[in-house]
Length: 350
View 1 (cartoon, rainbow, N blue to C red):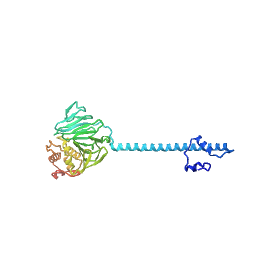
View 2 (view 1 turned 45 degrees about the vertical axis):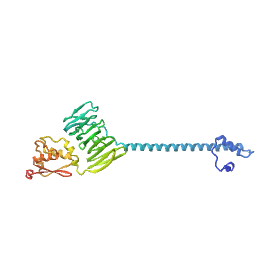
View 3 (view 1 turned 120 degrees about the horizontal axis):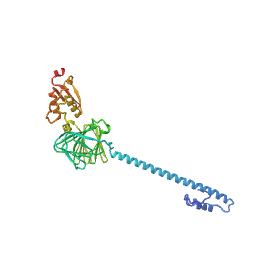
View 4 (view 1 turned 180 degrees about the vertical axis):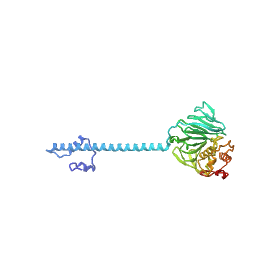
């Protein structure tokens, strides 16, 4: 408050900034008259007013810059949140891999349909299955396929699976088993299975996905997979089963008996042909079950024998046992290993 401006006391507050000419006039009227130094005082007042106006404009510019900077920072934060949220809600898509599968075993009627269903053919050993096609197994059928990258795929009875252009799978109905342990290319190990709006991803895993109406079941033999649908997501670890109903997780239970859980997938596999060495049968069984082989001393002497005929036992484990017994070998399966010994220890001692 200036002593030369008593109007400020009357109002009790600073007046609003006035335009330059009006402020000068107001200040001029407040000056005592006559004043021989009026012209000099006017120049001083003009300089003071000019400095005041310059400071006011500078303050306004600074406020605008602060507001703009704050708005820009908020926009960057909002965009960051949106990008992060989109990445979180949408599982990262695996790179496109040109998968080409070939049927290596089947039981019952299996059909391969082109993308527009204009052509349908019955599958046989060696039938290719490529992007854009669907494969369907009848109610009493199953099929095993192997890709050029080494991925193994099994389709249970009454199941339909589509291979999409980006290398992902769409399970329309039924149950599928995927095994990427034998794939050497890391990019080709990345598998995505879509079941309606749900996405299941894995990296180097043996797992199955079953769909029945709005119900979805994921069972993992080894490795882990990730399930995602909308904002919900969770991981499923080895020897776990996840049950989802209408997009909601209902239960997570341990796989007490993985062999029983995946028996159907083993039964659908291509069993070693007649005439294969015993060593090949054992290697096949160990690989399919994910177990290591433990051989008793001297067993290697009998592994070069070739199996004659193929047992007709429905369970692959019993078939393997029958073939080994014919070669003079016994088989014992533990949780981690397949233990092979000689029925007659004298045969192993040579």
